[in-house]
Length: 433
Length: 144
Picture 1 (cartoon, each protein chain N blue to C red):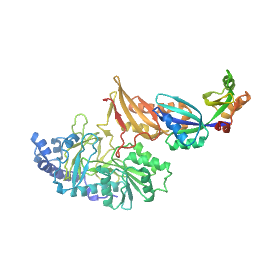
Picture 2: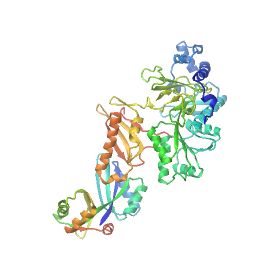
Picture 3: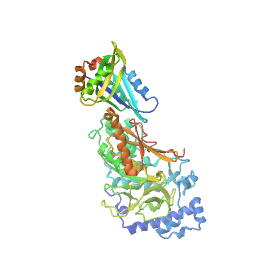
Picture 4: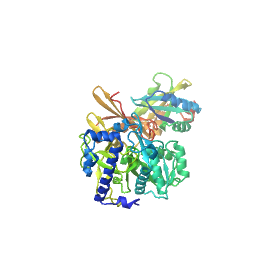
């Protein structure tokens, strides 16, 4: 079902008209109300009226995470606090968090955007959705919560953690939709399997994933283990939270809410805008945000845009699954490596679990890549040679996929990190320590 | 004629062997024999205990990767050259040995040895019996 046909089935030209009108409105407000943007514009002699076409956006300097952080807590707000109805903050894994305020209109747009992606994923008002995202300052929990409630879905706000209780709710409340990070939903699937919570005892049919990237292989594994169909959606607190884009059941990229966000793709080295159909870093500009408008935010996420019409009937452009982040790309012995490539190679390998941790260290002048995986199949314990064969097979697979030699370390089950505040932390680069 | 042996996957980190023996001890399970071999990154602990099925459950519950498989237990005289008699018999019948280890204690001046052979256990057991080696029953081993 298309939630809002009037906004999701427009012609390209119509999207562009809406975007231009809203871009001008956003730029003008940012310039007049946010000293940070005024200073940036004035430094290069740029005025809001210089933005006359969508391409003119390229005149505006990029905004980085550091820019946002330096304005902690409320420096980027374009509305006084009495107009703000909600505060969220992005995770403060590095330094201070970045704080965002939402006006009542911002909340309505957010709900609308979430309803669209949930409808695209096959969710209807008849569903019961268990939200296993962490709540709190993180936008994932509340974002999906409001949008689903807006559709008339029954929401179970169980939040992340306390996995045994999660499964009890899932079974006893008859949840049909599970919403969370893929790593946590996979963790719950493993636990469900142990507890014999199989189809028949649970009614799950749909998974909505966000908050972190995952590979197609990981999704298939979750789909198999739960017996459900899963879609992925994308968003970041800096521009709203979840609801920037979401996959439909055709599984051919995430439909962007084009009336809320303007997207550009830039070359990750030159930082110049490129043809958005090519792969590069995603840059986003908010088109409706009143509380905290954000101009040309560098997401560090790597994707590409597809404008071809989708079989689902929506005409909105689709962004591909995030290939990685410019900042979690590892350069190992001169080779670019994304953790997602390692994940692809690992998943589907027999005898081991789906979780992994990557360690990069330096010995002399040589980078060393170590991958830890959990040994699940106890029948291999009868012979050392079986375990050696397994590690060699994984090593060969990594080598043929990434052209890098890795040390494979088998560890005991359930010892690798599943998730930290909702997101798995799988890469440990120890080279500068 | 076979005896249940338990194999436990151990990461090479401090305290894991102690964790295993603590779990077993807590549940009143007695270890009769053990062997551990390790590589740089991991080890496999092999155990003969008095209650193998319970031991597997207890260790699984505690999160270990555990397997149970049949091995042979033999009793040989505790004197020079006794072991070679058994090994020669297997060798003459082209039965290879994957690994071998001895019991912690001994009974009636005889050493007890655990053997994991390539190929069918029954065949190896028969070869050993024929050569005059005492192959122990599982109940005999568990009650040591």
